[in-house]
Image (cartoon, rainbow, N blue to C red):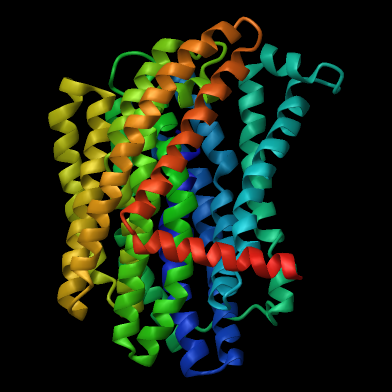
Amino acid sequence: MAFRIPNLLRDLFAEGALSSAFVTVFSQYLVTKDEKEAYRLSNLVATTLIVILGILVILGIIFAEPIVFRFAHGYVSDPEKFALTVKLTRIMMPFILLVALAAQAMGILNARDRFGVPALSSALFNVGSIVGGIFFAVLLTSHGFSRPLASIRENPTEGIIGMAYGVLIGGFFQYAVQWPSLLRAGFRFRPAIDFSDPGLRKVLGLMGPAVIGGAATQINFFVNSNFASYIPGHGPVAWLNYAFRLMQFPIGIFGVAIATVTLPSISRSAAREHLDEFRHTIASSIRLAFLLTIPSAVGLAVLNRPIIALIYQYGPFTAADTNHVAAALSCYAVGLAGYSAVKILAPAFYALNNARTPMLISLFTIVVNFVMNWMLVDLLQERGLALSASTVGLINFGLLYIMMWKRIGRLEGKATLITAIKIFAASAVMGLVCWAVSLGVGRAARDLETISRVGARLLEVVTSVGVGALVFYFVARLLRIEELETATEAVLSRLTRTFKR
Protein backbone atom coordinates (compact mmCIF):
# COMPACT_ATOMS: atom_id res chain seq x y z
CA MET A 1 0.00 0.00 0.00
CA ALA A 2 2.85 2.41 0.81
CA PHE A 3 4.48 1.80 -2.57
CA ARG A 4 1.22 2.44 -4.40
CA ILE A 5 1.10 6.03 -3.16
CA PRO A 6 4.31 7.26 -4.92
CA ASN A 7 3.58 4.74 -7.68
CA LEU A 8 0.29 6.53 -8.35
CA LEU A 9 2.20 9.80 -8.64
CA ARG A 10 4.60 8.06 -11.04
CA ASP A 11 1.77 7.03 -13.34
CA LEU A 12 0.11 10.43 -13.07
CA PHE A 13 3.12 12.73 -13.47
CA ALA A 14 5.99 10.66 -14.84
CA GLU A 15 5.27 7.68 -17.04
CA GLY A 16 1.73 8.89 -17.63
CA ALA A 17 1.08 12.58 -18.21
CA LEU A 18 4.68 13.75 -18.51
CA SER A 19 5.73 11.02 -20.90
CA SER A 20 2.76 11.51 -23.22
CA ALA A 21 2.86 15.32 -23.17
CA PHE A 22 6.63 15.70 -23.43
CA VAL A 23 7.17 13.12 -26.21
CA THR A 24 4.35 14.71 -28.21
CA VAL A 25 5.73 18.26 -28.04
CA PHE A 26 9.40 17.22 -28.26
CA SER A 27 8.69 15.13 -31.41
CA GLN A 28 6.78 18.02 -32.96
CA TYR A 29 9.71 20.36 -32.21
CA LEU A 30 12.09 18.01 -34.02
CA VAL A 31 9.82 18.21 -37.09
CA THR A 32 8.74 21.87 -37.08
CA LYS A 33 11.76 23.56 -35.45
CA ASP A 34 15.26 22.15 -34.92
CA GLU A 35 17.29 20.01 -32.52
CA LYS A 36 18.62 23.01 -30.58
CA GLU A 37 15.11 24.24 -29.76
CA ALA A 38 14.00 20.73 -28.87
CA TYR A 39 16.84 20.29 -26.37
CA ARG A 40 16.21 23.73 -24.91
CA LEU A 41 12.64 22.58 -24.28
CA SER A 42 13.90 19.42 -22.57
CA ASN A 43 16.09 21.52 -20.22
CA LEU A 44 13.14 23.71 -19.32
CA VAL A 45 11.00 20.64 -18.59
CA ALA A 46 13.72 18.93 -16.51
CA THR A 47 14.32 22.03 -14.37
CA THR A 48 10.60 22.52 -13.84
CA LEU A 49 10.25 18.90 -12.77
CA ILE A 50 13.02 19.21 -10.20
CA VAL A 51 11.42 22.30 -8.66
CA ILE A 52 7.77 21.21 -8.66
CA LEU A 53 8.26 17.54 -7.79
CA GLY A 54 10.90 18.42 -5.21
CA ILE A 55 8.27 20.49 -3.39
CA LEU A 56 5.73 17.68 -3.85
CA VAL A 57 8.14 15.15 -2.32
CA ILE A 58 8.69 17.35 0.75
CA LEU A 59 4.94 17.82 1.20
CA GLY A 60 4.39 14.07 0.77
CA ILE A 61 6.91 13.29 3.51
CA ILE A 62 5.41 15.87 5.89
CA PHE A 63 1.80 14.85 5.29
CA ALA A 64 2.33 11.10 4.87
CA GLU A 65 0.02 10.27 7.77
CA PRO A 66 -3.14 11.97 6.41
CA ILE A 67 -2.30 10.64 2.92
CA VAL A 68 -2.21 7.05 4.18
CA PHE A 69 -5.37 7.75 6.21
CA ARG A 70 -7.10 8.76 2.98
CA PHE A 71 -5.91 5.88 0.81
CA ALA A 72 -6.06 3.04 3.34
CA HIS A 73 -8.60 4.09 5.92
CA GLY A 74 -9.25 0.45 6.78
CA TYR A 75 -5.77 0.25 8.36
CA VAL A 76 -6.70 2.75 11.09
CA SER A 77 -8.08 -0.11 13.20
CA ASP A 78 -4.57 -1.64 13.29
CA PRO A 79 -2.23 1.11 14.64
CA GLU A 80 0.95 -0.91 14.06
CA LYS A 81 0.10 -1.59 10.42
CA PHE A 82 -0.94 2.04 9.89
CA ALA A 83 2.29 3.41 11.44
CA LEU A 84 4.46 1.11 9.33
CA THR A 85 2.62 2.16 6.15
CA VAL A 86 3.25 5.83 7.00
CA LYS A 87 6.97 5.19 7.59
CA LEU A 88 7.37 3.27 4.32
CA THR A 89 5.53 6.01 2.43
CA ARG A 90 7.94 8.65 3.74
CA ILE A 91 10.95 6.56 2.70
CA MET A 92 9.72 5.95 -0.84
CA MET A 93 8.27 9.38 -1.61
CA PRO A 94 11.48 10.70 -3.37
CA PHE A 95 11.00 7.88 -5.90
CA ILE A 96 8.59 10.10 -7.83
CA LEU A 97 11.32 12.69 -8.61
CA LEU A 98 13.81 10.03 -9.75
CA VAL A 99 11.33 8.24 -11.97
CA ALA A 100 10.03 11.52 -13.46
CA LEU A 101 13.54 12.46 -14.60
CA ALA A 102 13.99 8.90 -15.91
CA ALA A 103 10.71 9.18 -17.83
CA GLN A 104 11.81 12.44 -19.45
CA ALA A 105 15.11 10.84 -20.46
CA MET A 106 13.17 7.93 -21.95
CA GLY A 107 11.00 10.41 -23.84
CA ILE A 108 14.04 12.14 -25.38
CA LEU A 109 15.55 8.84 -26.52
CA ASN A 110 12.24 7.43 -27.79
CA ALA A 111 11.58 10.60 -29.80
CA ARG A 112 14.98 10.03 -31.42
CA ASP A 113 13.88 6.45 -32.26
CA ARG A 114 16.19 4.92 -29.65
CA PHE A 115 14.26 2.31 -27.69
CA GLY A 116 16.79 -0.24 -26.42
CA VAL A 117 18.35 1.62 -23.51
CA PRO A 118 15.04 3.13 -22.27
CA ALA A 119 13.56 -0.37 -22.24
CA LEU A 120 16.61 -1.66 -20.36
CA SER A 121 16.25 1.13 -17.81
CA SER A 122 12.90 -0.24 -16.65
CA ALA A 123 14.48 -3.63 -16.11
CA LEU A 124 17.31 -2.03 -14.14
CA PHE A 125 14.73 -0.44 -11.85
CA ASN A 126 13.65 -3.97 -10.89
CA VAL A 127 17.24 -5.15 -10.49
CA GLY A 128 18.17 -2.13 -8.39
CA SER A 129 15.05 -2.46 -6.25
CA ILE A 130 15.69 -6.14 -5.51
CA VAL A 131 19.46 -6.06 -5.03
CA GLY A 132 19.48 -2.70 -3.23
CA GLY A 133 16.48 -3.71 -1.15
CA ILE A 134 18.07 -6.96 0.01
CA PHE A 135 21.31 -5.11 0.81
CA PHE A 136 19.53 -2.57 3.01
CA ALA A 137 17.32 -5.30 4.51
CA VAL A 138 20.43 -7.15 5.68
CA LEU A 139 22.05 -3.89 6.80
CA LEU A 140 19.06 -2.97 8.98
CA THR A 141 18.44 -6.43 10.43
CA SER A 142 21.99 -7.38 11.44
CA HIS A 143 25.34 -5.89 12.37
CA GLY A 144 27.15 -8.05 9.85
CA PHE A 145 26.53 -10.12 6.76
CA SER A 146 27.31 -13.53 8.27
CA ARG A 147 23.63 -14.60 8.55
CA PRO A 148 21.78 -12.41 6.02
CA LEU A 149 18.69 -14.49 5.29
CA ALA A 150 18.25 -15.59 8.87
CA SER A 151 18.51 -11.97 10.05
CA ILE A 152 15.75 -10.90 7.65
CA ARG A 153 13.51 -13.75 8.76
CA GLU A 154 14.05 -12.88 12.42
CA ASN A 155 13.39 -9.13 11.82
CA PRO A 156 10.78 -8.97 9.04
CA THR A 157 9.67 -5.39 9.72
CA GLU A 158 13.21 -4.01 9.38
CA GLY A 159 13.62 -6.17 6.27
CA ILE A 160 10.53 -4.58 4.71
CA ILE A 161 11.95 -1.12 5.50
CA GLY A 162 15.17 -2.14 3.74
CA MET A 163 13.19 -3.09 0.64
CA ALA A 164 11.63 0.40 0.69
CA TYR A 165 15.11 1.93 0.43
CA GLY A 166 15.72 -0.47 -2.46
CA VAL A 167 12.93 1.28 -4.40
CA LEU A 168 14.99 4.49 -4.33
CA ILE A 169 18.08 2.60 -5.54
CA GLY A 170 16.04 1.16 -8.40
CA GLY A 171 14.71 4.59 -9.36
CA PHE A 172 18.24 6.00 -9.46
CA PHE A 173 19.45 3.10 -11.65
CA GLN A 174 16.56 3.65 -14.05
CA TYR A 175 17.66 7.24 -14.55
CA ALA A 176 21.45 6.83 -14.46
CA VAL A 177 21.66 4.05 -17.05
CA GLN A 178 20.30 6.46 -19.69
CA TRP A 179 22.93 9.18 -19.16
CA PRO A 180 25.49 7.82 -21.68
CA SER A 181 22.81 7.51 -24.41
CA LEU A 182 21.59 11.03 -23.71
CA LEU A 183 25.12 12.37 -24.10
CA ARG A 184 25.58 10.51 -27.39
CA ALA A 185 22.24 11.91 -28.60
CA GLY A 186 23.58 15.43 -27.98
CA PHE A 187 21.64 16.29 -24.82
CA ARG A 188 23.37 18.39 -22.17
CA PHE A 189 21.43 19.40 -19.07
CA ARG A 190 21.60 23.11 -18.32
CA PRO A 191 19.19 24.40 -15.65
CA ALA A 192 16.71 26.86 -17.11
CA ILE A 193 13.32 28.19 -16.04
CA ASP A 194 11.02 30.21 -18.29
CA PHE A 195 7.32 29.66 -17.62
CA SER A 196 6.49 31.99 -20.50
CA ASP A 197 8.11 29.64 -23.04
CA PRO A 198 5.38 28.42 -25.45
CA GLY A 199 6.81 24.90 -25.64
CA LEU A 200 6.90 24.47 -21.86
CA ARG A 201 3.42 25.95 -21.56
CA LYS A 202 2.19 23.49 -24.17
CA VAL A 203 3.71 20.55 -22.27
CA LEU A 204 2.18 21.75 -19.00
CA GLY A 205 -1.12 22.45 -20.76
CA LEU A 206 -1.29 18.88 -22.04
CA MET A 207 -0.13 17.49 -18.70
CA GLY A 208 -3.03 19.04 -16.76
CA PRO A 209 -5.82 17.07 -18.44
CA ALA A 210 -3.45 14.15 -19.06
CA VAL A 211 -2.94 13.72 -15.30
CA ILE A 212 -6.63 12.87 -15.10
CA GLY A 213 -6.79 11.23 -18.52
CA GLY A 214 -4.05 8.74 -17.66
CA ALA A 215 -5.11 8.23 -14.05
CA ALA A 216 -8.09 5.92 -14.42
CA THR A 217 -6.20 2.65 -13.93
CA GLN A 218 -4.27 3.70 -10.83
CA ILE A 219 -7.07 5.74 -9.25
CA ASN A 220 -9.51 2.89 -9.78
CA PHE A 221 -6.97 0.47 -8.31
CA PHE A 222 -6.62 2.70 -5.25
CA VAL A 223 -10.39 2.80 -4.89
CA ASN A 224 -10.45 -0.99 -5.19
CA SER A 225 -7.74 -1.30 -2.55
CA ASN A 226 -9.72 0.94 -0.22
CA PHE A 227 -12.78 -1.26 -0.66
CA ALA A 228 -10.60 -4.35 -0.19
CA SER A 229 -9.19 -2.99 3.07
CA TYR A 230 -12.68 -3.38 4.56
CA ILE A 231 -13.00 -7.05 3.56
CA PRO A 232 -12.36 -9.19 6.67
CA GLY A 233 -8.93 -10.82 6.97
CA HIS A 234 -5.36 -9.81 6.08
CA GLY A 235 -5.41 -11.16 2.54
CA PRO A 236 -7.75 -9.20 0.21
CA VAL A 237 -5.47 -6.21 -0.49
CA ALA A 238 -2.50 -8.51 -1.10
CA TRP A 239 -4.55 -10.90 -3.28
CA LEU A 240 -5.61 -8.00 -5.50
CA ASN A 241 -2.03 -6.71 -5.62
CA TYR A 242 -0.59 -10.08 -6.70
CA ALA A 243 -3.28 -10.53 -9.36
CA PHE A 244 -2.91 -6.95 -10.61
CA ARG A 245 0.87 -7.33 -10.93
CA LEU A 246 0.48 -10.49 -13.00
CA MET A 247 -2.08 -8.75 -15.21
CA GLN A 248 0.29 -5.78 -15.61
CA PHE A 249 3.05 -8.09 -16.86
CA PRO A 250 1.70 -8.55 -20.43
CA ILE A 251 0.54 -4.91 -20.44
CA GLY A 252 4.08 -3.79 -19.66
CA ILE A 253 5.68 -6.14 -22.16
CA PHE A 254 3.23 -5.65 -25.03
CA GLY A 255 0.85 -2.72 -24.47
CA VAL A 256 3.36 -0.21 -23.13
CA ALA A 257 6.00 -1.30 -25.65
CA ILE A 258 3.66 -0.77 -28.61
CA ALA A 259 2.46 2.57 -27.22
CA THR A 260 6.05 3.72 -26.63
CA VAL A 261 7.02 3.10 -30.24
CA THR A 262 3.73 4.45 -31.61
CA LEU A 263 3.62 7.85 -29.88
CA PRO A 264 6.70 9.50 -31.50
CA SER A 265 5.58 8.22 -34.91
CA ILE A 266 2.00 9.54 -34.70
CA SER A 267 3.24 12.82 -33.17
CA ARG A 268 5.42 13.39 -36.24
CA SER A 269 2.50 12.41 -38.51
CA ALA A 270 0.22 14.89 -36.73
CA ALA A 271 2.86 17.64 -36.98
CA ARG A 272 3.11 17.04 -40.74
CA GLU A 273 -0.72 16.75 -40.99
CA HIS A 274 -0.42 13.29 -42.54
CA LEU A 275 -3.74 11.97 -41.19
CA ASP A 276 -3.84 8.85 -43.42
CA GLU A 277 -0.50 7.77 -41.95
CA PHE A 278 -1.77 8.68 -38.47
CA ARG A 279 -4.90 6.53 -38.90
CA HIS A 280 -3.03 3.50 -40.20
CA THR A 281 -0.43 3.63 -37.44
CA ILE A 282 -3.11 3.78 -34.72
CA ALA A 283 -5.22 1.00 -36.26
CA SER A 284 -2.28 -1.34 -36.87
CA SER A 285 -0.96 -0.72 -33.35
CA ILE A 286 -4.33 -1.63 -31.83
CA ARG A 287 -4.49 -4.82 -33.90
CA LEU A 288 -0.96 -5.75 -32.84
CA ALA A 289 -1.91 -5.13 -29.19
CA PHE A 290 -4.92 -7.44 -29.60
CA LEU A 291 -2.70 -10.09 -31.19
CA LEU A 292 -0.43 -10.13 -28.15
CA THR A 293 -2.80 -9.45 -25.25
CA ILE A 294 -5.93 -11.48 -26.07
CA PRO A 295 -4.06 -14.82 -26.01
CA SER A 296 -2.19 -13.57 -22.93
CA ALA A 297 -5.52 -12.94 -21.20
CA VAL A 298 -6.80 -16.40 -22.11
CA GLY A 299 -3.54 -17.95 -20.91
CA LEU A 300 -3.72 -16.14 -17.56
CA ALA A 301 -7.35 -17.20 -17.09
CA VAL A 302 -6.70 -20.87 -17.94
CA LEU A 303 -3.30 -21.30 -16.26
CA ASN A 304 -3.80 -18.94 -13.34
CA ARG A 305 -3.41 -21.52 -10.57
CA PRO A 306 -0.21 -23.23 -11.78
CA ILE A 307 1.39 -19.85 -12.59
CA ILE A 308 0.56 -18.38 -9.19
CA ALA A 309 1.62 -21.56 -7.38
CA LEU A 310 4.98 -21.50 -9.20
CA ILE A 311 5.69 -17.87 -8.32
CA TYR A 312 4.11 -17.34 -4.90
CA GLN A 313 2.91 -20.52 -3.17
CA TYR A 314 5.67 -21.01 -0.63
CA GLY A 315 5.91 -20.55 3.15
CA PRO A 316 2.91 -18.67 4.52
CA PHE A 317 1.39 -18.27 1.03
CA THR A 318 -1.00 -21.23 1.01
CA ALA A 319 -3.09 -23.04 -1.59
CA ALA A 320 -6.09 -21.05 -0.33
CA ASP A 321 -4.22 -17.81 -1.16
CA THR A 322 -3.48 -19.21 -4.62
CA ASN A 323 -7.19 -19.84 -5.20
CA HIS A 324 -8.10 -16.28 -4.18
CA VAL A 325 -5.41 -14.69 -6.36
CA ALA A 326 -6.32 -16.98 -9.28
CA ALA A 327 -9.97 -15.96 -9.12
CA ALA A 328 -9.05 -12.26 -9.03
CA LEU A 329 -6.57 -12.74 -11.91
CA SER A 330 -9.25 -14.35 -14.09
CA CYS A 331 -11.47 -11.32 -13.51
CA TYR A 332 -8.61 -8.91 -14.27
CA ALA A 333 -7.77 -10.82 -17.47
CA VAL A 334 -11.17 -9.87 -18.93
CA GLY A 335 -9.98 -6.28 -19.38
CA LEU A 336 -6.38 -6.94 -20.39
CA ALA A 337 -6.79 -6.12 -24.09
CA GLY A 338 -8.80 -3.00 -23.25
CA TYR A 339 -6.12 -1.67 -20.90
CA SER A 340 -3.41 -2.26 -23.51
CA ALA A 341 -5.38 -0.48 -26.23
CA VAL A 342 -6.00 2.50 -23.92
CA LYS A 343 -2.19 2.84 -23.59
CA ILE A 344 -2.15 3.44 -27.36
CA LEU A 345 -5.30 5.51 -27.83
CA ALA A 346 -5.08 8.01 -24.96
CA PRO A 347 -1.66 9.46 -26.00
CA ALA A 348 -2.91 9.63 -29.60
CA PHE A 349 -5.31 12.37 -28.52
CA TYR A 350 -2.37 14.32 -27.07
CA ALA A 351 -0.62 14.10 -30.44
CA LEU A 352 -3.72 15.87 -31.83
CA ASN A 353 -3.43 18.50 -29.05
CA ASN A 354 -6.60 17.17 -27.45
CA ALA A 355 -6.10 16.07 -23.85
CA ARG A 356 -9.65 16.97 -22.84
CA THR A 357 -11.38 13.92 -24.32
CA PRO A 358 -9.34 11.27 -22.43
CA MET A 359 -9.78 13.33 -19.27
CA LEU A 360 -13.56 13.39 -19.50
CA ILE A 361 -13.74 9.68 -20.31
CA SER A 362 -11.49 8.86 -17.37
CA LEU A 363 -13.65 10.89 -15.02
CA PHE A 364 -16.67 8.93 -16.21
CA THR A 365 -14.95 5.55 -15.77
CA ILE A 366 -13.83 6.45 -12.24
CA VAL A 367 -17.48 7.01 -11.31
CA VAL A 368 -18.49 3.74 -13.00
CA ASN A 369 -15.78 1.87 -11.10
CA PHE A 370 -16.89 3.23 -7.74
CA VAL A 371 -20.52 2.31 -8.38
CA MET A 372 -19.61 -1.20 -9.56
CA ASN A 373 -17.34 -1.72 -6.54
CA TRP A 374 -20.16 -0.73 -4.22
CA MET A 375 -22.51 -3.16 -5.99
CA LEU A 376 -20.14 -6.14 -6.28
CA VAL A 377 -17.86 -6.09 -3.22
CA ASP A 378 -20.36 -7.76 -0.87
CA LEU A 379 -21.40 -10.31 -3.49
CA LEU A 380 -18.01 -11.30 -4.95
CA GLN A 381 -15.55 -9.64 -2.55
CA GLU A 382 -12.10 -9.13 -4.18
CA ARG A 383 -13.27 -10.86 -7.38
CA GLY A 384 -15.96 -8.23 -7.80
CA LEU A 385 -13.37 -5.46 -7.44
CA ALA A 386 -11.17 -7.03 -10.13
CA LEU A 387 -14.16 -7.54 -12.44
CA SER A 388 -15.13 -3.91 -11.95
CA ALA A 389 -11.63 -2.78 -12.96
CA SER A 390 -11.75 -4.91 -16.12
CA THR A 391 -15.15 -3.56 -17.12
CA VAL A 392 -13.86 -0.03 -16.68
CA GLY A 393 -10.85 -0.78 -18.91
CA LEU A 394 -13.11 -2.04 -21.71
CA ILE A 395 -15.46 0.93 -21.38
CA ASN A 396 -12.49 3.32 -21.46
CA PHE A 397 -11.17 1.74 -24.65
CA GLY A 398 -14.59 1.68 -26.32
CA LEU A 399 -15.29 5.34 -25.66
CA LEU A 400 -11.79 6.43 -26.71
CA TYR A 401 -12.10 4.44 -29.94
CA ILE A 402 -15.48 6.00 -30.77
CA MET A 403 -14.23 9.53 -30.08
CA MET A 404 -11.06 8.99 -32.13
CA TRP A 405 -13.18 7.69 -35.01
CA LYS A 406 -15.32 10.84 -34.82
CA ARG A 407 -12.19 13.02 -34.63
CA ILE A 408 -10.19 11.66 -37.61
CA GLY A 409 -12.74 9.62 -39.57
CA ARG A 410 -12.39 5.98 -40.55
CA LEU A 411 -10.08 3.94 -38.36
CA GLU A 412 -9.90 0.69 -40.34
CA GLY A 413 -12.72 -0.60 -38.15
CA LYS A 414 -13.70 -3.51 -40.40
CA ALA A 415 -10.14 -4.84 -40.63
CA THR A 416 -9.70 -4.47 -36.85
CA LEU A 417 -12.97 -6.32 -36.12
CA ILE A 418 -12.09 -9.20 -38.45
CA THR A 419 -8.62 -9.46 -36.93
CA ALA A 420 -10.06 -9.45 -33.39
CA ILE A 421 -12.49 -12.27 -34.26
CA LYS A 422 -9.66 -14.36 -35.70
CA ILE A 423 -7.50 -13.72 -32.63
CA PHE A 424 -10.36 -14.73 -30.31
CA ALA A 425 -10.84 -17.95 -32.31
CA ALA A 426 -7.13 -18.83 -32.19
CA SER A 427 -7.00 -17.94 -28.48
CA ALA A 428 -10.00 -20.19 -27.73
CA VAL A 429 -8.28 -23.16 -29.36
CA MET A 430 -5.08 -22.31 -27.50
CA GLY A 431 -6.98 -22.10 -24.20
CA LEU A 432 -8.49 -25.56 -24.62
CA VAL A 433 -5.09 -27.04 -25.43
CA CYS A 434 -3.44 -25.26 -22.47
CA TRP A 435 -6.13 -26.59 -20.14
CA ALA A 436 -5.71 -30.17 -21.41
CA VAL A 437 -1.90 -30.06 -21.29
CA SER A 438 -1.88 -28.50 -17.83
CA LEU A 439 -4.28 -31.16 -16.56
CA GLY A 440 -2.19 -34.01 -17.97
CA VAL A 441 1.24 -32.65 -17.07
CA GLY A 442 -0.02 -31.53 -13.65
CA ARG A 443 -1.05 -35.05 -12.75
CA ALA A 444 2.27 -36.46 -13.93
CA ALA A 445 4.23 -33.70 -12.16
CA ARG A 446 2.72 -34.49 -8.76
CA ASP A 447 5.07 -37.47 -8.53
CA LEU A 448 8.01 -35.09 -8.97
CA GLU A 449 6.96 -32.80 -6.11
CA THR A 450 8.63 -35.13 -3.61
CA ILE A 451 11.92 -34.50 -5.44
CA SER A 452 11.50 -30.82 -6.38
CA ARG A 453 8.31 -28.86 -5.80
CA VAL A 454 9.61 -25.93 -7.87
CA GLY A 455 10.71 -28.27 -10.69
CA ALA A 456 7.30 -29.95 -10.84
CA ARG A 457 5.45 -26.63 -11.01
CA LEU A 458 7.91 -25.21 -13.52
CA LEU A 459 7.45 -28.26 -15.75
CA GLU A 460 3.67 -27.81 -15.75
CA VAL A 461 3.78 -24.09 -16.53
CA VAL A 462 6.54 -24.19 -19.15
CA THR A 463 5.01 -27.15 -20.98
CA SER A 464 1.51 -25.66 -20.99
CA VAL A 465 2.65 -22.20 -22.07
CA GLY A 466 5.03 -23.56 -24.71
CA VAL A 467 2.49 -25.90 -26.30
CA GLY A 468 -0.20 -23.22 -26.10
CA ALA A 469 2.03 -20.63 -27.81
CA LEU A 470 2.80 -23.04 -30.65
CA VAL A 471 -0.87 -23.91 -31.09
CA PHE A 472 -1.84 -20.24 -31.17
CA TYR A 473 0.88 -19.46 -33.71
CA PHE A 474 -0.14 -22.20 -36.14
CA VAL A 475 -3.89 -21.54 -35.80
CA ALA A 476 -3.26 -17.81 -36.31
CA ARG A 477 -1.18 -18.56 -39.42
CA LEU A 478 -3.95 -20.83 -40.66
CA LEU A 479 -6.45 -17.99 -40.17
CA ARG A 480 -4.04 -15.63 -41.98
CA ILE A 481 -3.84 -12.95 -39.32
CA GLU A 482 -1.89 -10.26 -41.15
CA GLU A 483 -0.19 -8.76 -38.08
CA LEU A 484 1.30 -12.13 -37.15
CA GLU A 485 2.64 -12.70 -40.66
CA THR A 486 4.12 -9.18 -40.76
CA ALA A 487 5.75 -9.64 -37.35
CA THR A 488 7.14 -13.05 -38.34
CA GLU A 489 8.65 -11.64 -41.55
CA ALA A 490 10.22 -8.76 -39.58
CA VAL A 491 11.79 -11.14 -37.04
CA LEU A 492 13.12 -13.47 -39.74
CA SER A 493 14.53 -10.51 -41.67
CA ARG A 494 16.25 -9.21 -38.53
CA LEU A 495 17.72 -12.64 -37.75
CA THR A 496 18.99 -12.99 -41.32
CA ARG A 497 20.76 -9.62 -41.16
CA THR A 498 22.24 -10.52 -37.76
CA PHE A 499 23.65 -13.85 -39.01
CA LYS A 500 25.08 -12.20 -42.13
CA ARG A 501 26.97 -9.67 -39.98
